[in-house]
Length: 420
Ligand SMILES: *Cc1c(COP(=O)(O)O)cnc(C)c1O
Image 1 (cartoon, helix red, strand yellow):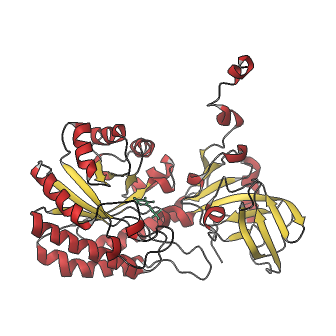
Image 2 (image 1 turned 120 degrees about the horizontal axis):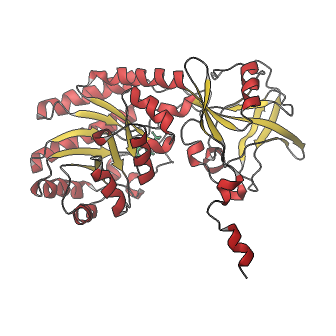
Image 3 (image 1 turned 45 degrees about the vertical axis):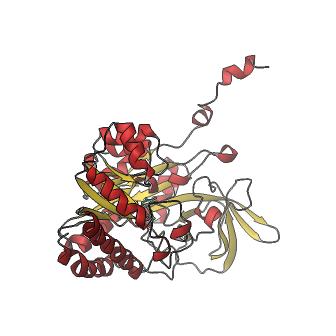
């Protein structure tokens, strides 16, 4: 049974103050998980998680994570700005972007954020943009065919648009060293929603060996490796949470084998995870508003994939429970759907559930990362708001719902009247 922090009475009362649909985040869950993650990686001399802002771009959440020692991983100007608003500054922010516009590089540089270059040609582009290269630079490595076993969301590295090849990356460090860059990092991200600890241990090994090779070939001393994101979460009931200790200890073994004898110790270990940090601690709450009996049984909700597109877009599984019916027998089979005029707008297909009545509150689990963040306005849908359940069980609104005025804000409505 998936955990939810409020009972039916509490959730019903909350939905009277804040009409559904809404997101609810559990501060206690976020903090406890972050402490567990940090503790596991405390076996390294230097460690930091840089939360991938795109997973949950709300500055209240970022501030909680900052208090737990996190930095931020950003991929756009607004994400850099949100980190700044949350008090995450300077080298605690890593700018891992691609196809980056000049003005975004300028902003990151002006704020002394760490710039992580996605391509060889961006060395020259950055130099032209800034008039010089920053003192610290990181490069994103694409291992191509050297890394196997990647899952379908991110695909095979050799078909991914990200990063530099092995040959390019060695040249990149050599050139930047000659240009006077003083501090270097090495980044890779080759997984998404991966649950196997071995996958990450193997990735770390690949990156550590490359750091050693870079040192041997160019004399560049890599000071941090950023292992990217991609740590998965158990969306399905039969899956298990990744054991952070197993990952940390496995990586430590590779560290002792490669990094320590090479003279690269102490090498800082960075992550830029999003999903495991907030994913399990965010819920999309919606209400069953219709039931429909045709060739199949449907439950219509007051939400839709504009609030959570993962099921519709990737066929992703999200556990759904009915508030107050947690222990009821699952003797019905439903498609649980949203109101978008797209047939893929289904939160669940052929799902065994207890009997759902109109008015029931549905809890869609594991929606705290890549949930509200991926929302959109297609079909005139207004994205829902976000609530935070504080550790003292009080609830505060950390983002209001969108209004029709928000939706029309980019239109000159008055102009339509004179337009012909
Ligand atoms: C999306 C992304 C992340 C976070 O991925 P998760 O699966 O949420 O952990 C980290 N780094 C980069 C570069 C990304 O694109």
